[in-house]
Image: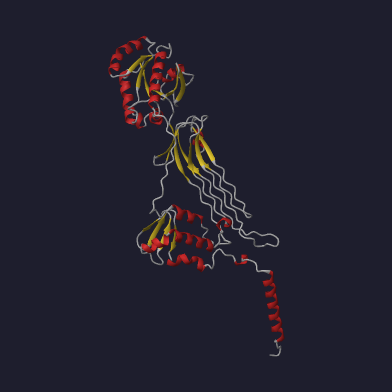
Length: 479
């Protein structure tokens, strides 16, 4: 059964915004008291957040589909719909978020670091919020926007200061078990270690972490063995320790050739050329192993490596190795510049930025793109003529109609608002700005006109009664 997962594809969907409400206030002696439809609630976000208690992506391997809750629709009496609940997904420290094309969206390092993977949709405005001096009683409300939805790839890159690399069964797990409190599985067969193991080591006043990376073999950078799956865990480490087996039983291997093979795989993987290297000649408690270490040490030192004879069984050389690694880790930490204070960059809108674009596409076809027009289309209830007229007025005020005329659009030409795979297409009429007139005085409910004074109502009633009496006196049933 899988117990460690460091790469998953996650399907996330934020909550949809709630629809606005179109309502008219009613109470005793005041049956038409004006619009009182509330706004819809905001949809919930899907957020990835680093949590110290999470060390693997196993949970998302078994349940890759995650969705936040939708916002509730608005209600009458100016009641706003409830916002959707944000969905916070805990991830391990060192998680990298990528899109399906491999582009990095976020690198989550540090407790509490968060990234919004899918943003919830806005709630639609109710007719109370849409009312104005010209539009006293809107008979429509705006729809809630759909939340973001898509796929993200999560990759875990272990956050450690030192990485132990080497062939399978070179003794990496044994070393980390005696240098720290880590208790990895140890056995005398290849690929015993199937997951990276982390240990915390104290050397003097320096405390650092060490990662035991599963064994590398020739072709690891191309996916052979387990190498490609776990080479990413080496990327964040400041120091690399080559653990070379000086007591291998394989006749076609020796520590120097093992080193060359591992270095070739690290170079093929890329991005690790600047990491300092240390050589740990392991299993020197065996007489033949010590003899081999004495033979190859001059060659390794001539290459510029610091070489240590170590043994996980006898604890030989482990103190010297741990303090040498602490020194290198300290140098790497001091070389990292201090984090700068967060700066807010303000980029003002260009004076000639209209907020939309109109592009001719073939004969008699134009496409409108832009955040505002596309959002307005999503918010429009096309079954309501008044709402369609409101959309037409908004597009006209934004300058879309003027731009269409400038590009030579004619009556009946097709206009698409939005991307090719999700656009609203309609036949354009140059008089679209007159949509309000075609629908009457849009947004002015005549039932809600200001009441007449009492004296005027009395005079009207008297005039109606006199007119009725006059008709009765002049009526001749024999005519």
